[in-house]
Structure formats: C-alpha cells, structure tokens
Length: 145
Image 1 (tube, helix red, strand yellow):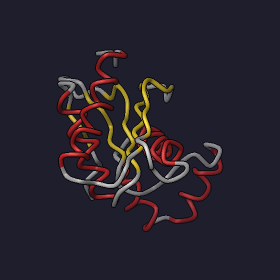
Image 2 (cartoon, one colour; image 1 turned 90 degrees about the horizontal axis):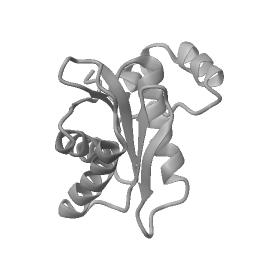
Image 3 (cartoon, helix red, strand yellow; image 1 turned 120 degrees about the vertical axis):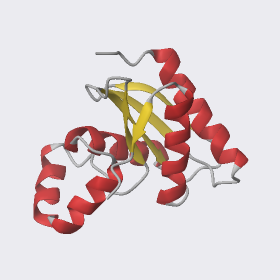
Image 4 (cartoon, helix red, strand yellow; image 1 turned 90 degrees about the vertical axis):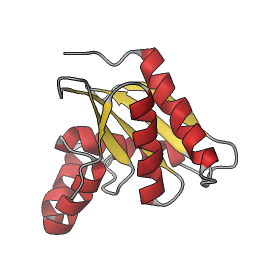
C-alpha cells in the first residue's frame, strides 16, 4: 500500500487552490488527511469565510469514515438520515455530508487519504479537490451517486 507523503499532500493543496483561482471560485479552504484521518496538509485562502478549514476537514473525514467520497456520503444521508445523525455523533460531529470531499487512491486502488474543500459551491469544491489529487499522481473518488 502506498503512503500519502507530505510533498504529495502539499501538491494537492496548492493545485486545488490554483484550480480555484483559474476558475474564479470564491476563496477556499483545503484539507488533506492521511488514511488514518490525521491532518497532512491544509490551507485557507485570504478572505475566505469563517470555519472553511473545519468544513473541509469534515468533508474529508466523512469520506474516510464512510469509505466513499462525500457525494456518496450525501446520498446516504438523504437515504438514511437517522444513521447519518448517529454516525456524525460517533465521530464527534466532524462529518459534513456534502460534495467537496474525495478519497485519494493509489495506483492499486488503495485508499491512502482524503481531501476536503470548502468555500464555493459543493460542485466547484469537488472540482478543485479532484484537480489536486490528479496533480499529485493519484486517483480521486468523489463518491458519485
């Protein structure tokens, strides 16, 4: 199994932010977690709204907790709201079930981490996340419903 190295996590963050600027998105927060859910890299752009990093982390953490990108987590939340409320409680309220979080997979398909982005629309957050993951040489799994 591959390991998510700091340099790759930093590439994910910097590329996600470059993609956001190229698309004229609102200021973003980007958080990269390793497969254990530990913080690997993060950045919040100037003039972003309050708590963007925490929301981005919740998208990434929810992806890891459910084993799917946050678009899939959102679908599950709609199908099974009681389960999602219970899961959110179990993980200390740190799960944000909306698009913008994606699993990071290595060439063998192993989950090596997750990225969460927050600040623009959920669809745009997801675009930035996937661009960062691709630039680092990995595959992003947004959990397409």
